[in-house]
Amino acid sequence: MDSLDAFARGKLDALEAGSLRRRLTPTERGPGAAAARGGRTLVSFSCNDYLGLSHHPRVIAAAQAAVAAHGAGAGGSRLVTGDHPYLGALEAGLARHKGAEAALVFGSGYLANLGITPALAGRGDLVLLDDLSHACMWAGARLSGARVLTFRHNDPGDLARTLAEHRAQHGRALVLTERVFSMDGDRAPLGDILGVAQDFDAWTLVDDAHGIGVVEDGPRAPLEMGTLSKALGSYGGYLCASRPVIELLTSRARSFVYTTGLPPASAAAALEALAILEAEPERRARPLALARRFTARLGLPEAESAVVPVLIGEAQAALEISAALEAAGFLVVAIRPPTVPTGTARLRVAFSAAHDETQVDALAAAVAALTGRA
Image (cartoon, rainbow, N blue to C red; front, top):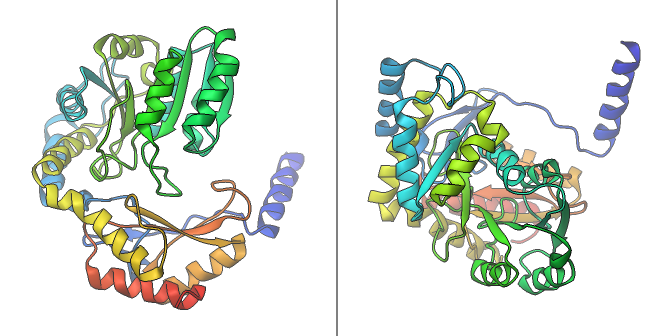
């Protein structure tokens, strides 16, 4: 196996040279946006728990009750033995929340996107992605065997031109985009994209992982997927769509059929979080308000979601500023290529209902001092 180790070491050396090597860092999370690393308590601005529900007493209690009643695991794929009662209740709740006929819960958002597109498109079909779409959307598109093309980020005109040039040569067509883009925090012009797609008989899949619970207003797509692991504070993924589509994916989405069902605790926690989300509009409004407070203090474009990028440029510089922020008591992770394009390494700042204004103002002051925006 010497050649395998040599290969791995060579790749690691190259990543190290470019400041692109990833390392796991043990991190403890607590309520109130608290985090602990290396024995130090930090305020985390890198967590996607946008509503602070992962530590909500009701959510924790729901998970504990589910474990006591149904055990720690689902025990098998949902089509075999793993379709425990919480999953049906969660799917009904998600469908109601999205105004859809039905929903299907997957093991994660990544698994959902790996399964949806290949179940609906194949050889001879066309898949078009916003060129900043998440890696899992790209993975699902490539697994489908369809022809994969891109359109310029958030540009319905470019989408229309691409469809006009290529749609007629293909059978089915899918358009893939995100409601909120995970690394830039900007929002897709969904009304325009849906209109263009409909004009060319293309089906639109919207990834709502970073929108649900925070910024969900506007039109719905025929295929609305998302995660249970961010605003809902749990773990898992889902698709909301018409009942025939959901029934088809129950039989044809390989990442659903051939994987173990979501654990009872995860489903029960998400179901309780969904109930809290719907009952507390003030909690939902808070992350965006705090994000806009931050962008106003730094003179950045007004936040469109709970995610705000602070562009740095080179990966090493982003790592150094992230380390300086950690020394000052803030956890703000540097995002580097290939997650973002070369030359656009950044701080990705995520705001939560668990933050308070004092914490946001203190972070803004620290970022301003470190980046020369003061």
